[in-house]
Length: 302
Image (cartoon, rainbow, N blue to C red; front, side):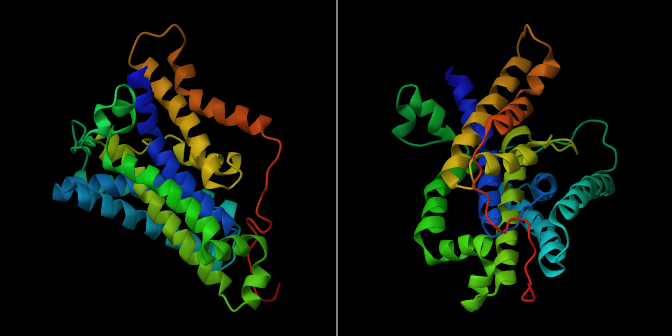
């Protein structure tokens, strides 16, 4: 049980980073439908940066930069050019797979064995890590996990207790009022998408730099979409995102646990467990408090 819960906290890390990023972006009216591609290119950037330099820090910075770059393309098309967000995001998700596969081949050719990098070490917090049961679960994780959970109170405070948070929320609810107040709606949305892209790239790097130590084009496996769904299921709040993240992290941990041991059920069903949970929770979620202008391009003419 201890190992399972420890893995659940660990596996929830990228989902939490991605879900928080999505909450902030969607509060301004921007659905980042390219989140799967941002996760993937972040994973690739983290792997390449670490492999070429031998530095985990450079790898994480490269992942953030890759995520911001992908988000910038998405923001330019959807915010500046006011194109449809779902279509643009879908196209960029497909493009990300091609880009990663192409440059992976250009840089490394076709290696006979998978390329490996070192992963982030576990950091034991003094005293707290010695607490029976809870110490091993919560206080023997890597730096990305600690960062993700530190961001929870920060995200809640900024979104609901600061003028910046009020601006973000108002941009998604009533952008005309924000515009009348002298705040550039397009700029707010563009910068928020860039920030969310950086967090998404960092989330994607967890799978290469923080967990597996290798890269394949199917490494994300739809988890970007799960982070996207968590934002909806959590009613566009950081607290809701945390609860959803823990549920999906546990489902992911259970699937990994049974895949690495003997199981009485088919492996394919076990692998599908997090995605089945997504469908089930979506079906039974009845009350959605959707931002009024979510997915709606804004221009002064409107």
